[in-house]
Image (cartoon, rainbow, N blue to C red; front, top):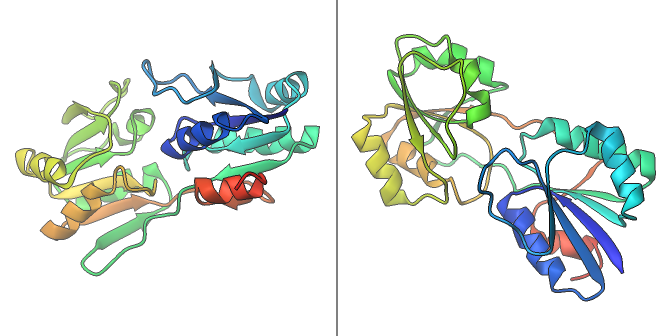
Length: 245
């Protein structure tokens, strides 16, 4: 029986776990970071919490006789992706990175791409006065010194200090709808969207609403995956690489 470890908690990670759990020749374990109090649990075995860096992950791969490692973490989870690449190389474990494609601008979009949250925070005051911030609670400290702009930050759980002085927090979990996003933009008088290039359909409606309203979007580019790691863009492609599709 092949043991496959999925690092993730993303929609694609859960979809892949469900497909693998239905295979009698596969044992699938999903590892969740544990940053969300009530995560959506995938099918199959589940472990919660870190491994203790690349060395700890490598030890776990050996102990559990993992056949293949799948990095299905968020596109911006650089640390765990780097640890996965190092652990896979150290143990000679095949590694796939499952990454949903980036968003692609269409006619009417007013995107301002930047390379980091810090760059987004620096440019933000020049583009709007009431910004919807959907970059995740862990990066909120990058915006703590922003002044002259009211930030409406959306996250699954409350962000931790330091926080911006002018801040409204919306505790919500996607997927989001067009009508729901229109209501958020209208109620909070949003004139700027700040987000990461996470890709996928679950959180894309906010981009459509910004387009409808002709609003600027500060878009943080996603980092490149570690060098040498094979990337697949959907569950079907991952299953094909695993010889199960």
